[in-house]
Image 1: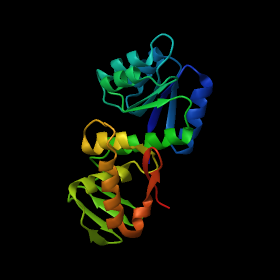
Image 2 (image 1 turned 90 degrees about the vertical axis):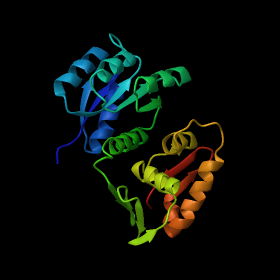
Image 3 (image 1 turned 180 degrees about the horizontal axis):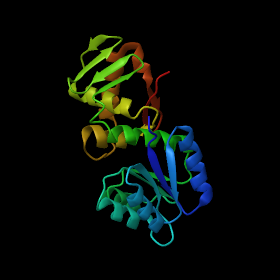
Image 4 (image 1 turned 180 degrees about the vertical axis):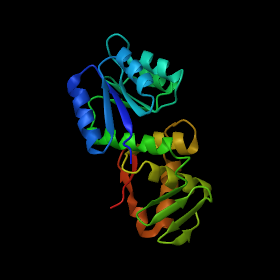
Length: 224
């Protein structure tokens, strides 16, 4: 099977090497660019790049400009890296069509997990049936089976379980879950999610242990 190509754009060679090493271990083919102009040229030359990891602060052309150029022609998933966590920057990134926003310093393992989650989401139309740890989710039929036995879930419980499985291994904040499953902004009411997670765990029986609580943040779906 052909390896997926990921373009890593950062003017710091040490950062590119770090990210490349971890992505290569996960069987991705990594292309590198040290500035924005090089990144744009490389992206349009290669054509089949599956995802871009893009630093914000770079010489010649910054990450925002690169994102604008690429978004004129492509919906390729983009992860932005930034040295500072600024809400205005983050909002600008999402307005430009950025898929994920990660502040430096970050864990390379978390970065790889987010890459995998985004690539799964990008290809979700092809992945109609999800199967992991004895759980099978048929998205087309809207059915869930655990150890081959059907489980009755509400619409939101089904969507929540699907979202967890597609983002397995990734720590998910309550804000992110609300935005993606309930499709509205987070205003501090975590009870909605916590109530649904509790019901979902109960219906999943022993498999409910796959949904780990991350205190003070949210949840992570992880098969033991």
